[in-house]
Image (cartoon, rainbow, N blue to C red; front, side):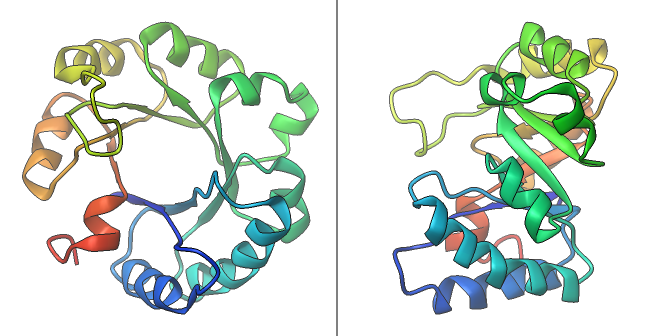
Length: 188
């Protein structure tokens, strides 16, 4: 397993936290706490519960989109959509030793490199239920980006254990997985 993005259901976070504990125990490179639908106060409460789980397992926890909160809570890094990341000052970006951006093209990855990212995600590579009706960007783009990039590229979107070797053979440093980890057992 490479890294995990997470999704928490509603306010009853106990089942989510139990699942996250299993994921963290499996030893991914990092966990990105991505909860776009939570209000900031709710996201902070969840982050305060998730950070100790990750740290106890020795897994870095990166917060998603909340730069000030990530600094305040001592998160291990920050992941943001590229446009939002560009809105942070250079000093704010330099405050994170792990800084990532969601990218969808070679131009995006080049912009992320200029902004000081230490890694990027690129996707979606395969068809995925998370992006219904939106064609995947595909492995050809992944190969092109991995050949040109100066930083690690992690494939995202439709990744399964069988596809992990495919994206790695295309040059990806690894992959990000959400649905497969939160719903299935094939990764754990």
